[in-house]
Length: 434
Image 1 (cartoon, rainbow, N blue to C red):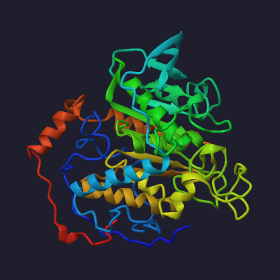
Image 2 (image 1 turned 90 degrees about the vertical axis):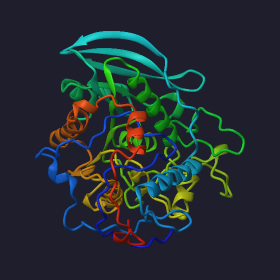
Image 3 (image 1 turned 60 degrees about the vertical axis):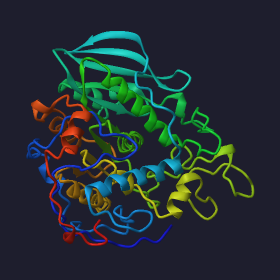
């Protein structure tokens, strides 16, 4: 693994807004959240790292450094750096097919449950009219409602038709959210050979399964945004374990998710934890042509933690060789809020990685955008789930009503006309700022 320099971040001055358009996606169509109140008391403590990790940025490569070594000093700089990070990751894990702006829906069944309507449906999620089955739960009453996409191995669990404590869709719909629960589609199967059902263009990097899952989620976000009962400015995503990895990649790579919750996925690369298994071919270790290139026996890599006899493969290998880690993806969320519902795979020391995104948010003029809770085990608990639901209620329900439905054009036009001025003092920024 590449050696990384340990960095510490001083305080940077408050910025009131982003100063330029940037990245591979434009700003999402979401309400401006500058008037959101402080987090409610039950979750407020989780937006600050424990004293043991405050100001500690670990050994991760600074996200504030451009590839040429220059330093991010302004919000405009960050937008350029953000685009560079996106390009780097898409180059390594594969660029997406064109997004589907208006996915086709086929309704399969309808049922009234409690105080909401359940629709079983299939949704177009990939080229050649590939689909995924899901459950759409719509609360009774007049919308538009906030919405949350729930991703997991199967669609039934999220909709409350499977295991308890991972029924995020059911529980959030009871609280007034439209929810869409989906499982793994054939487009990015968990079965060998793990190759997503998409042929990249000549000379393009083959699409990795985890990137393909993120693409599926992006199209499901578009599906929700097109529904009349959903406010397209208020769509989040949540997943546990495998679903947590899926939700993390989707929300980081697609800005139209207004906020996100990742339940104990393993938010950084960590080969001391066998379940933080990004090295596997169904995540980031897939090699084209059905074998690990460079292996003399030309056999597929065996499952399990990488070792000398079972080395890393695919983009996972190249990411580590080049010193990359998932904290770079986290930073793409800024200034959108996210919560890490940590358990056995994401202990409190993960704050070292999260501190990098907090620093980006500070530069952009936002606070209370990164949170992390902790529990002992991997399985969600009633307490950890309550924290998840309060997080979504805070960021998707408690916003300035006057700004709901603001289009990205209107918000950016106000910024470009200079109606709100950012205050910046470059002297406060060090070369290794974050």
